[in-house]
Length: 219
Image (cartoon, rainbow, N blue to C red; front, side, top):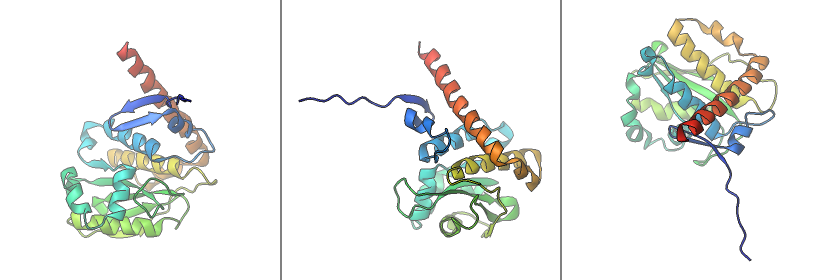
C-alpha cells in the first residue's frame, strides 16, 4: 500500500538559511535552539548591519564553526575566501558536539576581537564549553596574523537548561552594538533571563514577518 508523506512546511528561505515549522517552534520555551535557528539569527544580524560595520564583522554559521573545530588542518584553506584576517570582530557559535554533524547539548559564543588581539569566550553556563572553544580558537589561529590569546569572559548566566542558544544570539548582537557605539562591557548587563525570554518572541515575530512579506511578494 502506498503511503503519503506530508512534507513539513517551509516557513522562510532567507539567504543560505531554510527554516521549517519545527525550527520556528524551537523559539517557544522550553526548547533548545538548533543550528538552523542560530544560523538564521546570525545571517539576519549580518545582513542588517550598518554599512560602517558590514565589512568589519564576520558571523560564522554553526556549520562553519563546527568545521573549524573538527577539521583543524583544513580550516585555513577553507576559510580563505572569508578574508577573516581583515575583520575586527569574528563571532562563532560553539557547540559541545565532538563530531562534524549537527547535535550537542550546549551552545556558547567565541568572539575574536582584533582590538584586544584576543579570543573572548562567553559561556552562559560558565566553563561548560571551554575545551571546545579553545580547540576552535587553536584551529582558527593560523589564519589570523596577530597570534591572539584566549580568555574566558564573565558572561550573562542562564538560569535554566535550554536558553544557551538564545544567550549566544543576545551576546552576539550586544557585541555588535558595542563595536558600533563604542560602549564597554556593561552592555551585556541588559541580558537578563527576562530579556532573553522576550527575545524569543522578537525573533519568532521577525521570522513570521519576513515569511508574510515573502509570501506577498510571490503573489
